[in-house]
Image (spheres, rainbow, N blue to C red):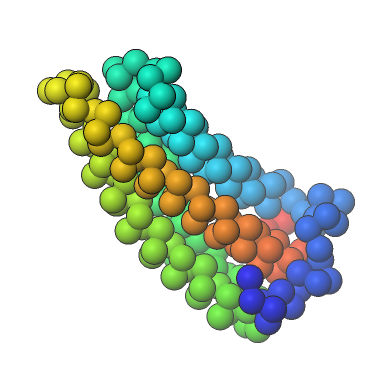
Length: 177
């Protein structure tokens, strides 16, 4: 995250958050959602690797890809739509010095949407192939692995930046109590 966006992070470093009186249940719940996104991305990568290494049967892989892929897509879309429409404007109103950082996070959401759409098309294709031509699933799984890696990389950077920008604003301004 750029130096100018770490304005409050210097006063509220990550290791002090859990003990801060303004680190409320709602902040913990929001961060737990981030942990879920990281975990789902990891599950999808591990399952795809297991399938590619022939440690997972094609039908089981298709079922898990459909289930966890759907959960990840729906949850991420809902989460960042809420952030863009409600949460970030509230934070920007409280801390106008960091509006550029909040705008950067919204831009990340837009970029992530494109990556998620590409992943969804590929995952849907594999699920269809599981019913129509299971032998062809393997050829498509490499692309899914690349998409899941990209999603994981984007999430790792974005969620860390988001937490490092947002949580100090909340702690400083006693928001979301």
